[in-house]
Length: 508
Image 1: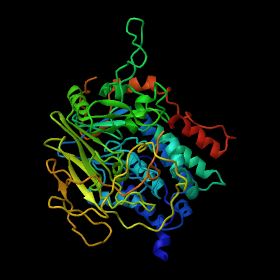
Image 2 (image 1 turned 60 degrees about the vertical axis):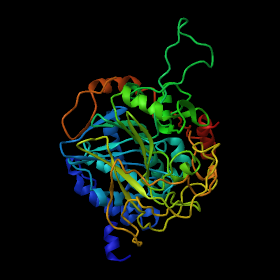
Image 3 (image 1 turned 120 degrees about the vertical axis):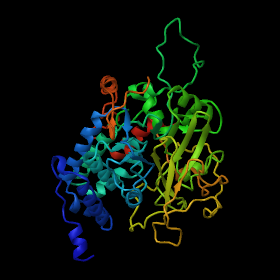
Image 4 (image 1 turned 120 degrees about the horizontal axis):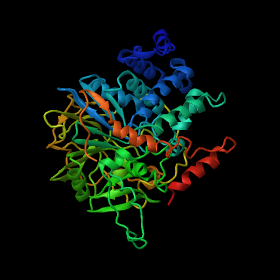
């Protein structure tokens, strides 16, 4: 690559204290990008293992202190950018920062989970987000996705990626992977922006089970399924390393990570086989918004592959979809990984998008869309025998046009890949929404997607990601329930045996 390339791969020194600032984050972003163009093991040349682990631990200390539900209070005149699934597509993350800017007192970010797996640079995504959290903790909220779990990150490639980049024989890779899993277990499950907008990865959870007494007991199978409240989310455990829907103290976390909006009314358990998550209709969304004083839900979790197998729901080729439009407010899905997935014959020609919230109404998002950035040559870390997907089991595949044809009301976009196209960043207003599309998605099978295992508080000072003392106290009691050791295997257990064991709680 030449001297310039070699200079870019010089090891970075992790600054102490407040010296780890935005300037360092930009330097780290460039160094990680340069390393992504080299063999995987060259990442250690940029960020040696001790510095890598220290960075993860510093971010983890901040996340561990945060409650399950964090509140983002933007400063006057500030914006809040909500980023959906990234799935290891590091260069598209850099595109997002190029379009809307880096975190600052005037621009808060909420990253809505699924940072890793499927793409080749999940660790680079995690490291840059960890650095940004340390540099600007009040301006960066990291929310957990279903792939931020021991099971998913083991099966869908993230562990293999970390071992390839930090070494398997020297055990440094295992130490880095362990630090990532610990950090994942401490991620909040949801965020409320400006008291009006709920951001969470999958969807609404079931209410915690009530204590059954002789007087209140009901016949088996007669229990009503109902969604919980914002207070239920705030009081819940973060779920440990592998939220298990069969464990009472972890079921809410599993639901938040795996639930999906539906076209049919009502709420039904089993968004995935094995009683994982729920499906909830627009009537449920309306009641939740009304009862909790909210007017907007932004969720992620479903990309074009998942929606290809749900022909009754709007597709995701535009990077976002308006799923529920009710008198009380709206629910959108936001997906930020264009041309997804990175590997495989069934790559979709979808755009990525982020939602931008601002005054005068924090509940009316505009969407900035973008095409995929040029990607260095890389190999997939995901096993070739990927298991069938809980996300799409039992769903029929729908046909998709070869490419998303422009329509009269399709917004302009940034073409990050240097291909012919419009070059203006488009802010799609809340009334516009994505162009109406027929049900779509590349013809694919379930094997191509994945499987899974009270009132608002008083506002804090402007421009902060905060929690109330009551919320923190509520989390203290639940902290032990979701231990980071949940789901871990004994040291002598083989990787294959461990994989099978971890899969068992989430199999139908």
